[in-house]
Image (cartoon, rainbow, N blue to C red; front, side):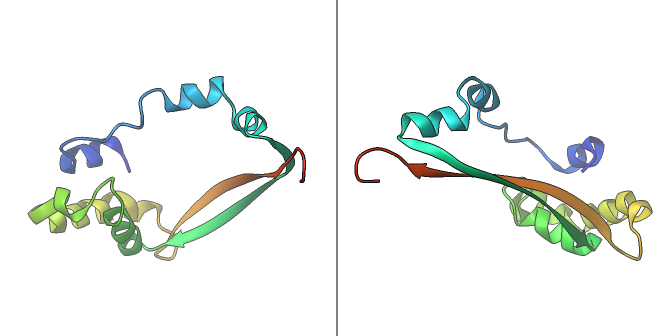
Length: 114
């Protein structure tokens, strides 16, 4: 969502946990797993494409803690109009396409008895 659209409706933005990304960089997941007695067993990455209508996307946004109905309150209809106006030029056949990359690491417990 473009910042200027978000700014018209959002009174405050919840910040991410302060320093969370720096913490993960300083202490990577594989190091944490190793200290807990796990060895890497594989990494899998995949890409998923999802098609949204603008109404579906608006519903999804409202289902998150980012912009719940209580934040929009009586301005929800105005938000819907603004969202439709902002996003319609990017829709193809009434849909917006989102491509998301995912990854997960598998690990197995090491040590006696495993």
